[in-house]
Length: 127
Length: 155
Image (tube, rainbow over all chains, first blue to last red; front, side):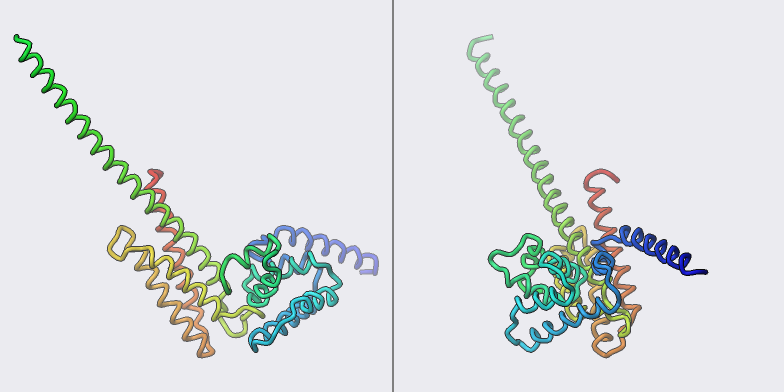
């Protein structure tokens, strides 16, 4: 198989993966759906986990958390905007991952919480 | 026939008609009461189904081994949330009422959840507990759905 054929195969595989990605049900598999929509690799999702874990540890240690800092860390790590940060938060929350961090971040907007975060802030007083 | 007797007959007829109306109204009231009771039960059962579906979603994410635990998912939190849903359902279902069988299934499911919690805390989660828990939840939801269908006269 020459280089051109290899490239064609990879392109075809990418196309197939994209189609398969579109069939993933966001409600049941929000994080998998996020990974494909962000074109993330194993390393990327782990870096996201690392950031969430860092703030989860801070919450567990009852340290004061600066949520703006958390948001900026995600933005600079993945070169993304606020709307994408929201998507990451929602995907993790729906997947029952890092729920304390998601809740803390969503609550930092109170009383002007974005509508998308109502499912987090209004569901329970504390996840 | 004297005017007196005509008046008496008319009076009797009016009294009988009044009695008939009173009986009819009583039966209507009873049927309304039954209908309201049926509607309240249906609403309660629908709410329980919602709670149980949420619990099913949480149970589905319980790791069946230490290796399969997903980063950021805390089984203790999932167990806590599932238990809350059980409490809502068990608090609504009467142990002697028409839905007592579902209550029994949920009590069994609750004990499976407790068994899983013990095994998870011991560091060796038992997958069997999760599988049985899922089956019990499915049973409870199916039974409740069938009951609602029957109440609506669809089955």
